[in-house]
Amino acid sequence: MLRSINLWIIVLSAIVVAGAIYFMVNTDADAQTTPANDEGVNTMNIDKMLSKYAVVEVKPDLSGLTEKQQQIVKILVEAGKVADHLFWEQASYDGLDIQAKLAASNSPQDKKILEYVNINYGPFDRLNNNEIFYGKDKTIDGPTFYPSGMQKEEFETYIKQHPEKEKDLVSLYTVVRRTGDNGLEAVPFSKAYPEETKKLHDLLMKAASLAENESLKSFLEAKAADFLKDDFYTSDTLWLKLKDNMIDLVIGPTEVYEDTMFNYKASYEAFVMIKDKEATKKLEFYNEHKNALEKRLPVSDDYKKEYKGLSSPLAAVQLVYCGGSSNSGTKTVAFNLPNDEKVREETGSKKVLLQNVLKAKYEKILVPIAETLLTEEARKYISADAFATNVLMHEYSHAFGLNYTVKDPELTVKKALGGDYSAIEECKADIVGLYNQSYFHNKELISDQELKTHYTTAVASIFRSIRFGANGSHGTANLMQFNFFVEKGAIVFDESTGKYSINYDKFEKATEDLANLVLTIQGDGDAKKASEVIEKYGKFTKNLTDSLKKLEDLPVDIVFDYQYNW
Ligand SMILES: [Zn+2]
Image (tube, rainbow, N blue to C red; front, side, top):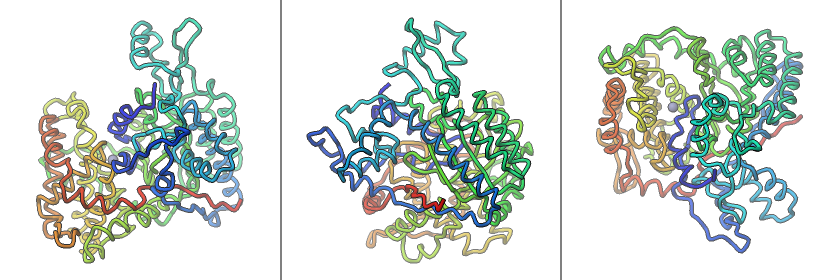
């Protein structure tokens, strides 16, 4: 398997982010390619490449924690670094060697290249179609889930000939290796990475031994055991039952996006977090209105569903450490886990908002975009709080509407809409989220000013997301909203200043109309309509392309600089 550009375009388009919200999953269409220098190194632009990422200091405040809790956090960060190392091993066959080679060099240029290799977990630019930016070989091997050089067809043919091996070969938690007789075998992660697995187990047991909160203790013990079993059902379930604890943790093989060939294999990641009690309480307010929000959707009752009353805990947290897959390239601001469908159906899922990451993206990216593209009047109405709430409402709103079509209760919307499903689903989550704000406004739970702030901040965020092109579900979803709002007169472009203003009188109705459109497409499972709507609204206009050019020098994402005093 090669880390070729085409593969990655497919993968980037396929990032549905079932479990997590990723911002800017698209590629940077504007990034320039420079001629390779005589060493074959495409890093003439290294300063420019580095400037795409704004550095954000992470200084976790542990002062609200007891002595034992602080010790636990430190142990978990250590465990997080093991997961981070495992992701390096998974991301490419060459990454760690290249990292070591660059680290040994004294050249200032190499130091910069190392920095960029570290951001990307390898010599490929995740913001630029994963183009190889370092090394003579422009086609290095991709992720190590499969044998070096194995092609898709070989795997598929082998499985057809050996159906008894399929379950293990496609498992989330195995790597595929060649056998002596040219066959393929599945090796569980615990056997493929025995040392690291043991380390993870031991560190989590050590942390568990210090835990005074019973739910945290059981969760950590279960997670430690699950690493040895290559099965995370028990710990995933217990993660949803964490109660009255200050520390939160996601660790292990989680998302499948790095498996660019099949999306079968999970890659390692880690989030170590401290709960932000006040912010969590504020967000829980939205939980109480879920049923009312579903009932109020702007479609007929056939297109709404009843809640099953599953647990849907919510946590606003401060990120202490982020490693592995979730730390590669663009950074997550919120996620909804676990991905295990069985756990989700039996117990539910948990939404986590990373408060300090949200704030950093707001300050470093959203504010400069608003300053560049919005009128002075509109800029009065953007806020970090609204940004966070919009993200939360997006997550909630994935749950609204139907999963199965109205006419055929056996047919999933996902299957009916095929390749256009993700863009429609992401658009639904955004637009229903915004539409829901008018519910709170009508009930006088938020003020006129706050409603305006939600709308305006959402528009600034639309620019942020479409900077990376129409590839990928998030990019398309944002383009659709932008063009729909313009058509309805909710976003108004001023030719003379090149800035955008918001017509608040028209905005609410526009959210209602677009929500109606996408919820209906989903309920009908109408693939034809879906592609028509994407064709009509999911494209760049000249004004928009010109506007995006003005954002070229702004960072597109952030990297963390950990400032620990331990
Ligand atoms: Zn989403």
